[in-house]
Length: 296
Image (tube, rainbow, N blue to C red):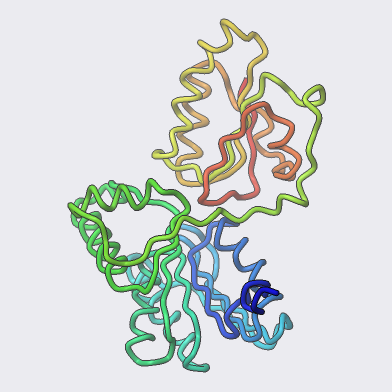
């Protein structure tokens, strides 16, 4: 008979803090949904991404039941980054010392490292969702971003990567592998809540993009190629689900290419319905928000 440890189900740590930045939804939000009913004492902290008019907030749970919450307006301009760190430390500073701190990005990992130094948390994990060589157009900000990322990766207890390419990109940047344990983890998704369509019921000529609308995502390349695609597939179309600072530019590009946006003011169709009904749906990991356009 195998020992009990060989058959026991893995248990979540009894006390966990998850801190992240958000636009609407994303991998960290899925992790929040997973941890909430499984952790005895759980604290979720969320800060809006820079440029999003939303509030920072925290939710504290005991055995899956909400026991406390709070929210604050983010500070203006670049002060927001310092404010996010301060509020994370403040909200997570009270609690048991055996907690696991999961940071949704390298900036918030600094808060976890400070809490570990103060012995308010036992271990810090960086949940690395993406790696962008040119995160900011400003060279100084870009160097600062990579300095923070490099420091966080070297000092956390482990790094969870959503792709093996993240570790490879950092290795190329730093000239070698990090000593910090690296683990590739799946991106959270509510697979059982997604209705699967038979192939005969989907639109075989529709491409759907799901994600944060920023230039580096490359949606503009699909829009530019759509007139060429339609020479071979007359009813080809592109459905974009998401929002972001690049949305207006994409709409203008679509009009210039003669594939103007339609249904721009309609609310987003439920993601669990829109993507499965498309032939191709390249969903980026960042986030989505309530806006959708169809270009054809």
